[in-house]
Length: 56
Image (tube, rainbow, N blue to C red; front, side):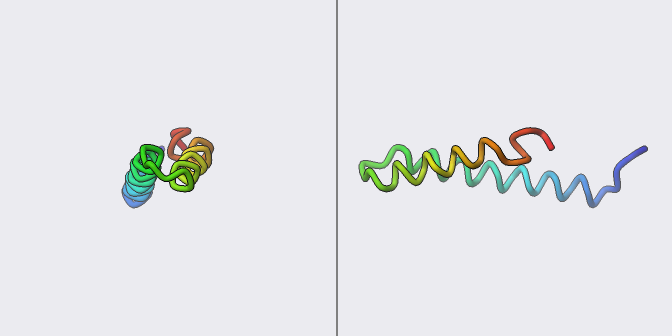
């Protein structure tokens, strides 16, 4: 059974947002400010458990 087109678009948008957040967090980890590094690592840890990363 084929999925509705809107569902595919929704998933694609979700993956795109996940990747934008991941890039932002990776940029933070390169900061010279320890609190920014910690935030970046925390966000990456969270994103590692989120749906788009798992392909869901």
